[in-house]
Length: 142
Length: 198
Image 1 (cartoon, rainbow over the protein chains, first blue to last red):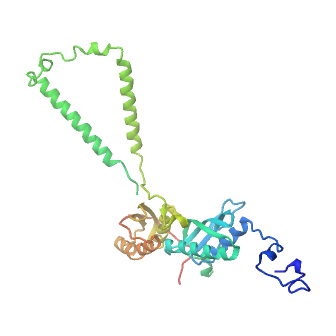
Image 2 (image 1 turned 90 degrees about the horizontal axis):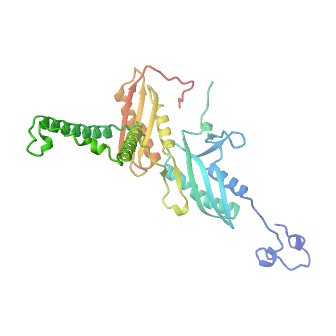
Image 3 (image 1 turned 180 degrees about the horizontal axis):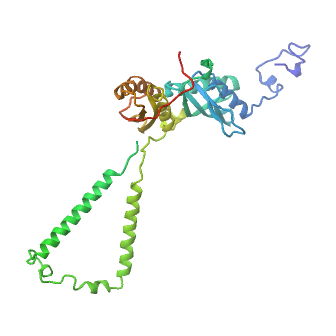
């Protein structure tokens, strides 16, 4: 990351930077993530699990339909650097619902912490539908 | 698929029948004079309702009749409500082990619809409905399967047992404690505009 106080990496007569030290961090500014960012990160991470689907389409949040290819709907509640996630998703039938949802919980807990820097404490999952498979895996011959 | 109040109706009919039987036998015995030795009012020549007007003229009688009527109305309404067919569907299914990490919930119809859709993929099946009862740990499955006239009912039942139920158990994670299959033969057929060949 570029540090304005030193004029760039290794700049001039200034003392060497302490990338993780308290002195330098105060000059680097702050990075603030909105809830929406965490929600989209979590939704994308969940959708990357093969057996998980979401909802898509609709207008202004109304009339959304089950879509195995879409991202699940995630809502986040932030308290400091701790996030509580609620996710509504679809699971491929006949995959084990307990196994898939546990995988979602573990994957989100790990990856959201990695990517967003917030600690995920609790993930509530609601399975909204079970789907027979992904349309992308099928070819339709007309 | 739906639970009717047959047991309740039979129980109350039995009670009412027994009460009427006892009253009828008592009336018969009193009329024949066999109970005269027990009480003078039960004598064959007696007029047992002679003192009734004294009771009916009491000031509290209207209030007592209103209370009795209200109780009868409540009993009748309760009986009518019990006549409404009930599905006795399983409550929300819980898949989480440790609620501190978060809960995992799924409504029972979500699972039932998936099983029914799976059954509808079987040959000769024109429609299917599924109902999950019991609980997540002790689930019961009821299937109502409509097949066309060409279907062999035993083959359909075998296909459900060998192909549909194992998939349902895999998804749910626990075996069914009870499975009921109702086969209905229909003249209707189901056509599809596409077929999965691979």
